[in-house]
Length: 262
Image 1: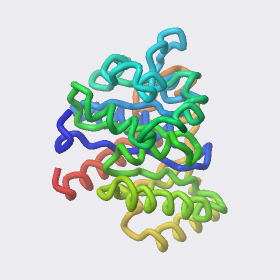
Image 2 (image 1 turned 90 degrees about the vertical axis):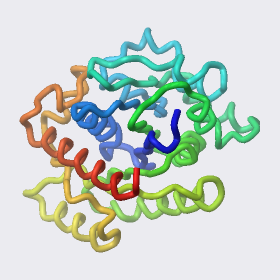
Image 3 (image 1 turned 90 degrees about the horizontal axis):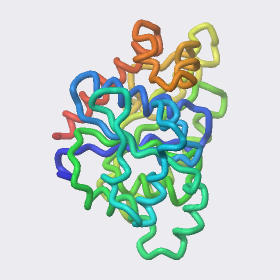
Image 4 (image 1 turned 45 degrees about the horizontal axis):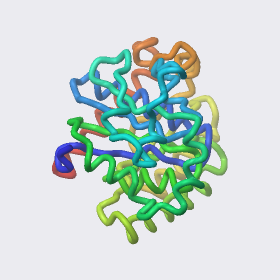
């Protein structure tokens, strides 16, 4: 793996239900559609990214758990998805116990980073779908990444939750990974008919400034339906508002990546 060429981005927020996995799989699909080679690492024990990309449970016997405990090399856990140019390292149920198992492991915060450094694979982008918690799995993702993308639901306490995540990112940056940056914050589940959505968006933009992407992801029935068909919404219905938003977000992500001199 060429560290200078591959961009590794964690998609993180300790709050559940903010559109993390939906953002991971649709952003990955949008990047693959413009001929980028993309790998998703499913680091969430619930495995929704794996399910949302149609990876059957019985084929997940080599997964992120085995990579983290150094039982197998990262490339041995990679599976192709139905999307050309998009691969995944699926999650496994064992991952829920990994936090406890890794506590006694030396350099436990670096397990994923080391696995990525040793991997003999080439990707343009690696997106890590983090669990909804700030435990050791998310720390491993942040230590392994160059940047963090934060999905933020347009709801009342959105900013309150994100300040804890920002503190964690700052701590990881100070202690383990000085190059870590917030790539951007994406507002999800935006409802244009709801005044609260607009007010939250204004607050987040006032607080984070140009770190917030211009693209907002709308509340959209097709976005909610797509995972049950094991497909990203961009494949399920490319014309819907949600798909168009994720394509637009991919454009913004690439634009920002070019600015950091990739």
